[in-house]
Image (cartoon, rainbow, N blue to C red; front, side):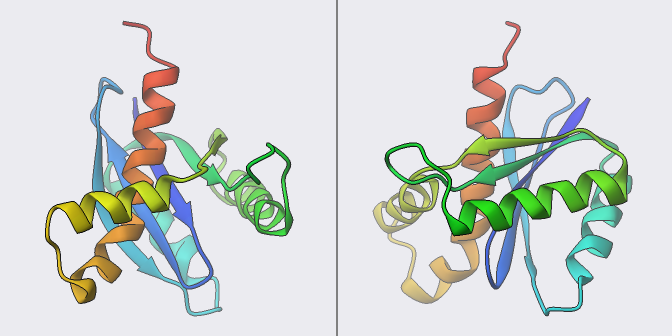
Length: 138
């Protein structure tokens, strides 16, 4: 069963998908948020197109493990996804994934302009890969 990984942000949502075996995550796209809930329509399309059975949403936690205001927003988003798509939605600790994605892109000598468009979907892939690794049955 394929899984969809989401890095939910104020302006953009990074999207990644797993292979059918749930072994690897691949960056897919970035959804621009426009304030009209258009992101739910696009996510619904991706779920259908990629035959997604579960969704993993990154949960930003504080370094001490507590959930702050940003985390509460992600929890609300995950609840709304569950309600609208009738699929299992898992929250996964995403601490430092955006920092890691940014570092990988810098080390890969990706220009600042290109990094802006890649960092969210790369963070989504890191969130999903971490979830897959932690829940691997291999």
